[in-house]
Image (cartoon, rainbow, N blue to C red; front, side):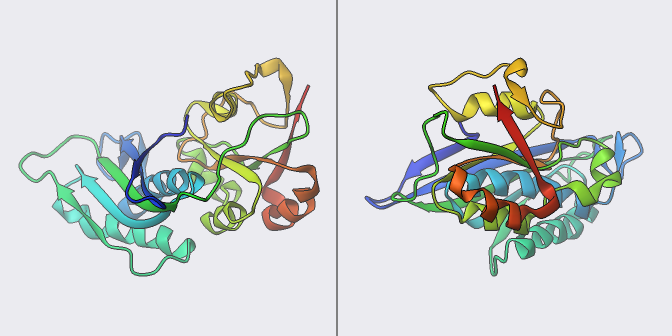
Length: 237
């Protein structure tokens, strides 16, 4: 099951609502990871936007819940705008609220991305042995996201892959590759022993630094060309 809510609007269109939370990451003294609020917002937006797009949604609005303080608001908005630019999305409204009555000891934000989906857009597949699998990007978490930023799959690459027909994409979050694979299909259950890939399939992928794609074998060369060095195959025994 995807981490989104689908709300039918009309006979041909629905709303896709996706969200992400971030805590203990920012510029406060007691934060576990010290990074700018622009970076915090960029990666939180990234997760919600990838979930929305993977479900077939086209983002139309972003909502920020800010618990970092009034002074951080403009940086947070900058981070969201950076993500929108990578997705080549133009005038998307950004709104939200700041907790200004009390100062928290650690940074925290919540991000909601709302998108619209045409009901004739298919984003799901049934598992079959004919499908080919890959991970695009690398699972990273915490300070690794900053240290190995060059191995985080760009949003622009994710967007290009999402436009391919007859494929299924699935962002990888904190529970890792194996967990997400087991959310993709209702007719298949995977174990760690069944998967052969260069990554630890139990490792957290933090702010969706990678995603899984299931596709028809004849699409492999096209996907490899788009993903380039971010492409890592998964063999299922």
